[in-house]
Length: 259
Image (cartoon, rainbow, N blue to C red; front, top):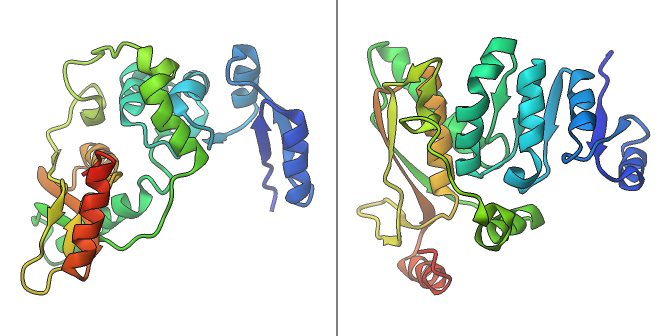
């Protein structure tokens, strides 16, 4: 009741078609991310911006900047860790000054894993508040495929305008560890499955999961802010019941240079 929302983008025609698909409910805002004035006007006219348009390094920097400066909350579904680091290093202080909450990694990358680690920590502390999560193993049972945006992000990082952008060392430490004005003492070490890991006992076999590093970085960011573990080791891989399935998956990953 009383909720107002809008769909935004650069094509009025496509936005109006989407509006019709949604039963005419959302308003339409035409704003190209390269148009600073349009983006600024958009974020000043709302409380929260949710960005689904990747590659985010190409399309969403101006939106994060405008939200941080205007005090408008922002979240996205990016898995682009280097870009998220850049946004934290550049705009975290600005956002804290205006009260804007800038939250990355809010899609399939990386909410299920991020929340599971948080809930495991909470469960562990139920018996003893002094307990601290030290090691997490994830055995993924997942069927998914890369979206067009994910493929474009991958290609852009290799051959697009993002590939030519020189990375800047904006902080003396990993921006994912930034907590307030300082580096958090709560750290996460990623020890993800690199190729094929044969399980012992009843444990399933595991192979490399291409998004495991992104999930680990999201957990690193959450732990830096929430402080549920001083030193956490995180290990993730795709689970396989049979050795042949794991070997087949590992060979396939190796063929594409991902294992």
